[in-house]
Image (cartoon, rainbow, N blue to C red):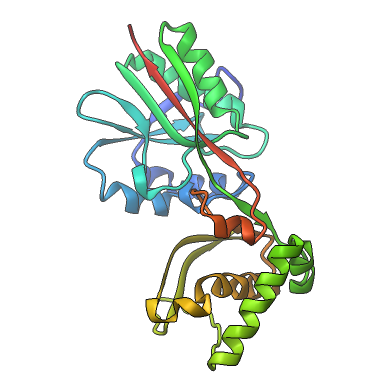
Amino acid sequence: MTLTTGPDAGCTPRAPAELSGAWSRLAERRTPASIFLTPEWIAVAREHDRAEPVTLAVGDPPVGIAALARDADGTLRFAGGEFTDEQDVVAPAGEERSVATAVARWIASEAPPRVRLEFVPEDAPTLEVMASVLGARGYRAVRSRLIASPRLGLPGDFDTFVQRLGKKERHELRRKIRRLENATEATFRWAAGSASGSGVLFAFAYRGTLALYNAAYDPALASLSIGIVSHAWAIREAIAEGFDTYDLLRGDEPYKYDLGGKDRWLGRLEATLP
């Protein structure tokens, strides 16, 4: 049986292994693409999540995927928890609303006492759709803004990136780069797997986006601003490699805006039965 896309497409619980190929293809067609919604990432995150995994396929063959988790108290949420910077249904561009509608209807049919969806991009229709569907089914649904997740679009060359910064930020970045380069034989290189050295950025490269996940550095070199310079060099190399987005992920730390980051907001939906 083939279910067409649209608000009447049905949801079916499926084993993740049965969906891995279709899931990967759908994740690649999402706009913007996010490594945190791939089957590989969700599989790792679920290893650290004690909740019951629930994986839904929308349509047959799948036109959308939803990786959910059911807590011991019956709460339904997206899978991934704190390990996942962005959570959402997985749908190709243009199909986000219909997939979210199908998933919301499935959730409503399960009648969980609570639905908690967090870290969902506000520029996606998911929270709006979920709130509407669940509200019509008797839930008290409350949406709220959760946290900023800055990112920046990358131009064709590093000089253009620097010129786009504000006057103060541009001056400070150039000064810090010169200071580090004059103080030590500092270099920047990509490293797969383990890496040694004083400045380290951990990032994921996926579908044109370099997403910063974590960073570490030697505190003894703090006076050399090695953190911000490492970001600048990573951006320079990302541009050279043809990436179009540098995603600083969730959190509103000042350095993200010094680098020209623009807010992309993540939201929350809390829906409860009376």
